[in-house]
Image (cartoon, rainbow, N blue to C red; front, side, top):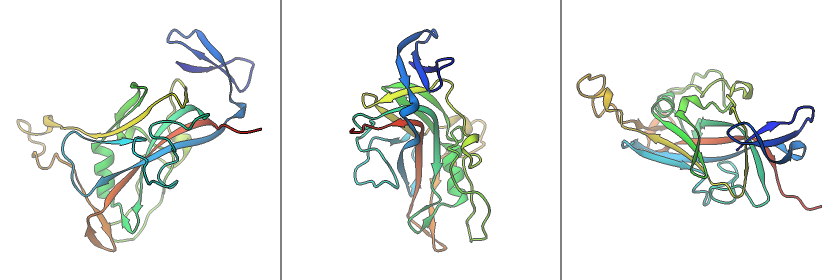
Amino acid sequence: MALMPIEGQPGLFREVDDAGNFSGPVINIRDFREGDKYDTIAIPFGPQSWGTEYIFFQNIQNKRFLDTNLKTPSKLSAGESMVLDRIGLYVRSAAGISQTTPHDFKQVVDNAYYRLDINDILQDEGPAVKFPSGYGLYGQTNEADQGIVSVGVPATASASRLVKKQLLNQNHELRGVLRFDARQWLVGAAPFLTAEQATADFTSVATGSETQGVVLVTNFLHGLIRSAVTK
């Protein structure tokens, strides 16, 4: 199901089926606020084996609000609902004192595939670079081995929106996947890369020396959020 605005009724939406027919109750988004539900995964130091997957929204144990604002694994909180408008990825510039180098950033963004499933139904998929969050740093720096790069321009207006908005609640299971797939067509008969080169190798840099750090990636689900309140 998707949401469509009701003509002449600002703030009111109806659910529509695949044929475009109104099929659900009227949704009043005047009680919603604009915001994000988000979660962060950590890609460890070292080569990433082909087929490695990192799952968003599933493991929130011991994470604080800096890295996730979900309170229930894979779900919105009880009484909470959301009109999902866009999906974004953001590679963090630093993890503690370890800073993500432009080299690491590019290998994550250009080698990874992302998909979002809701209740095991595909919502969107594609190369990670397809999903700008509209958030992030912009500019330049003269630090050694450092630079500022982002997935798209850091402006929310530049982030692509879903063609059909989705209404989510605590009964929907969220599953975002960042995956590093085998790219055998780049290896072998047409040797653009060796098998070793085709395997991503992520590192992190801290205080000018290479360390065994991590690359952090945050998945943002942006839209209108309504939380349960007591009156």
